Each structure stands twice: as structure tokens, then as C-alpha cells.
Amino acid sequence: MSILITGANGTVSSAVLRSLTGTADVRVLVRDAAKAPSGVEVAVGDLDDPATLDRAFQGVDTLWLLTAMGPQAPHAGMNAVWAARKVGVSHVVRMSAIGAAHDAPTRNGRLHALSDVELAASGLGWTVIRPAFFMQNLFGSVNGDTLYGATGEGRLGMIDVRDIGDFAAAVLRAPAQHKGSTYTLTGPASVSLRDAAAALGEVYGTPIAYQPVTPDDAQRSMLDAGLSPWIAAVTREYLTAYSEGWGDYTTPDFEKVMGRPARSFAAFARDHAAQLRP
Image 1 (cartoon, rainbow, N blue to C red):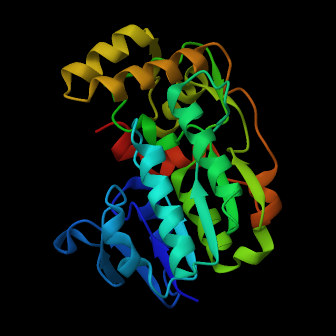
Image 2 (spheres, rainbow, N blue to C red; image 1 turned 180 degrees about the horizontal axis):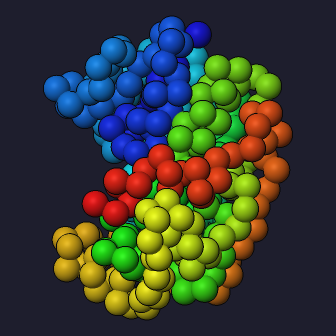
């Protein structure tokens, strides 16, 4: 069985590749072969350019489909699904977004809903994975003895990206067992950033305060850092929704499939102390 990984250099797909270590016939799709991860077969192609995909998808049984966040994401996903149908891919495991729906409070969630529906109607075997807020999103958020965040007092069922990688790898290795399933992946508990600051204080052995910032201020900071206006605006939409409690839940999906609970925030904080407080 050949597995093709898209988005191979990104945070989530990199975790998927690590979790697939030891699995035979893994291929990555990249725009530039010189930037491909090592140790796997490389196919050069661009999800935005359908003419590049047929050859890259040849011989693939299972596709890990991750598209970059942006207004063109449904176009990239459509190209991938069409190429998969043409060359005989049997199953697509799609990385969607938490709360993807036609009435989601973010444009990103509404765009993902379109792509999820398209995949389900494609005639291919499919599985959709919708992860919660990534714990890794907090990297660099601690400055001195303060954790800064723009989710207010909202609680989040946040998940460690390593667990997304482990979950995706399990599905990719045995896709038939997950055909037609949509999984929402959360951590084992819903926590606020104030809770996270308390957990970080235990890791560092010194009190860590939580300082909320507004979604508007966060958007301005993202623009100042050079992020695109679209990404900054959509991230603000997520931050506003999270601050209003939109992400305050957990699901049993991860443990049901993996047979173990997802990593806790405390475990994540211990393992990543240097990245959280550089």
C-alpha cells in the first residue's frame, strides 16, 4: 500500500511522517524536491496546479490531504480529489478543521465544510479528521513570567500535534476500518489559557501569569509580523469564537481509535518547555 503525504513540510504533516516511521511505501508531495523531507520517496507537484498531479499520484493507494489555510484551499482540495479519482487512489484521509460547517463562525471553517462535502460525494473511500486548537500554537507565547493569549477566559479542548500525527498514521495504515468516518480530535480536558499558565508555572518552578490580549490586538500584531491580511483576519475570527466558549468541549474520538488518552497539556508543557518560553 502506497501512502502519499501532502503538506509534507508543515507542522501537522511533519508529525504524520514521524508517526509513519517504519511504514513502507510512503511518498511526499512537494513543490521543490530540494526541500523534501529525507528518507521517503519524493513526488514533485503543486495542489494549485492540477496538471502536475496525475503523475505524482500514480500508484498511490491512500492520500493524506492537507491544504494550506487560505481562500484558495477548496481549489487545492478539489484538484487533489479529482486527480485521486483519475488515477485510482482508493482512500483519502482529509485534514479538515474543528467545527467545520456551513454556519461555522470562521471563513476557514465554512471553506473546509465545502471540501468535506465534496470529498464525501467523490465516490472515493474517505475519512475526515477535524482537530481542535493545537497546543503547539502556544509556542513562544510566554515572555518572562507571563503567558500572553487572545482567547480570553474561553476553555479549549486543545490537542498536541503529536497526537494528530499518531492518529492520522493509524488511519492511513488501515483506512478501510475508518471509511466514511469523521473524527473530531481533542485533548483529554478543556482548559483555559489561565489554566495553562498555572500548569506552566509548575513546569518552570516559578509562577506564570496569564495576560489576555484582545483579538483585535492579536490581529494587528500578526499584520505587523508580516502575516497576510486574510490569515490575520481569519485567525481573529477563531480567537473571538474561542473567547466566547466555542471550543469548550472534548470528544472520545481519539481514545476510541488509539486505545489511549491524548496527551494532557501538562505533559505537552513538560516536553516543550524550551519552545514555550524561548
